[in-house]
Amino acid sequence: MPGKRSFKELPARLLAWYDKHARDLPWRVSPADRALGKRPDPYRIWLSEIMLQQTTIPHGTPYFHAFTQRWPTVEALANSRDEEVMTAWAGLGYYARARNLLKCAREVVALGGFPETEKTLVKLPGIGPYTAGAIAAIAFDQQAAAVDGNVDRVFARLLALKGEWAEEKKVIAAEVRALVPEKRPGVFAEALMDLGATICTPTRPNCLICPLADMCAARAEGEPDTYPRKPAKAATKVRHGVAYVLLEGDEVMLVRRPDKGLLGGMLALPGTEWPKSGMPDEAPPVEANWETIGEVRHVFTHFALILTVKQARLTAKRPDGVWTPIRDVEGLPSVFAKAFLLALPEA
DNA sequence: AATTCGGGGAT
DNA sequence: ATCCCAGAATT
Image (spheres, chains in turn yellow, orange, purple):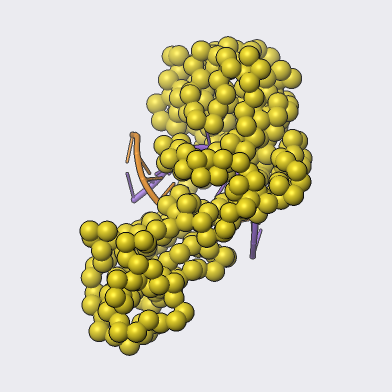
């Protein structure tokens, strides 16, 4: 049995591959343009990294365009009202990211610009180990590692890691840190992610065209797609709730959810709690002639929700709501957007 | 170390 | 149905 594989040639091999096969993404500077001295805009790199946390590029990209058009600079974003940013983020999910985005923008402006090192970046709200490394490397050419889900998968296979996944991830982080080249560390970060996204894919990796195939222990074993070996996830349970569409004239009553917890800080339809078991036992927000207009099924990370939607027309507005003309409703998270659509199918 | 936190697309 | 996605913050 040979000893631990050497990845001495890995960085050069990977960079050569990337020079030819880099994905063209809106926030990126291509390897060719980098060679001409062009540098990415730290604001755009930061924004894209936050938006793409646990989010696919097809889903995040339209939001990236909308944000950069509306807020071209971190100063513009920092000066925006919280509600505008939450509305623009609606539908993208993980709304703590949007709250932290604004906090971070304001801290960055107070600092006079983005800090340039991993150590300082990671102190900012919404920036964790991955994002700090990615920004430091990609935007500031720091010799930092950016270990995302792609990179975890690539190295789980290169090393054929079979142990407990939480421990193996630490092994991977150390391995990647040791491999980051002095020159073009940002390009190296992008290249590793692209390899995972386009060749070393979760299912059916295309080892035949992989530039690292000869270094890959999982490839040598013959079943690379069985890596990484992650623990099984718990089954998602079902919860029930009721959402209310209160109409008065041509306006609907919305509410602003508190900053903490699920859908924190977002606009919503008023409704019951969603108890972990059983049916909600709360009374409707007002006495009215409630009509059940449908049911929405929506899957969150930890549970599935069956939301009964009831509608009533009032003759006087409740004072504690955010009354909004029906045609102007925007900024609802997906579950409430679906529910509202039941009431206003033409909207 | 485990849990919370969204949403949509691919398989 | 299950897994995955340029993960971070909280408990």
